[in-house]
Image 1 (spheres, rainbow, N blue to C red):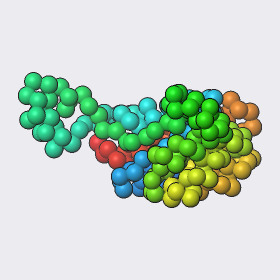
Image 2: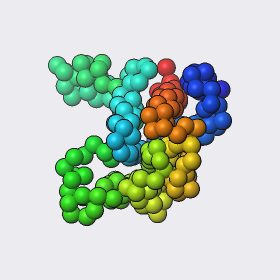
Image 3: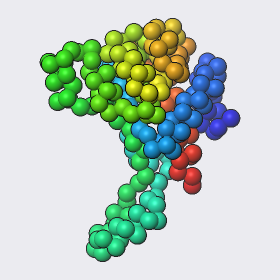
Image 4: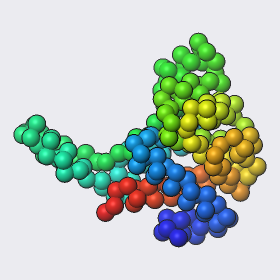
Length: 211
């Protein structure tokens, strides 16, 4: 078992049954990135914050620095003799990840012009490509805007991972890989979601940026 999964189960023993699904989520996202794809993330309220949190862990170093590739270092230093070395020393490898909850102007335009329940579906339609992954977060599993996003993802050829609570709601039946944490209170569910996606981010970093 990966070290991050061991740590997850030590902190939250009740999540032991989810370990295979968490491993599968990491593998699905790893395959997506290796194929040149991206991960889209959606959620409401605290889950919107989780979406942004995941972006922060994946678009730069999480547990380790991610030095740029030698060819990029060479290109930067050749193109910019004065600034190239600084850029090459400080840039870090990033995994293309978009929080669909973060675009205020676009979201309010969708609400005003199309419909509030389509704020994520419209973005999945615009951004999503076959082979991408949608990470859909809903503690109830019943958030209409999240469910519509998954529906669009399915017909657009995206894979979907659903983070939800004990009962899963419709999200658990719609997405390709449901992660239903054994908790009922929103705060407890979100606490466990955070622990799970931290474990996933650690596995992705190790797989895609070997030290």
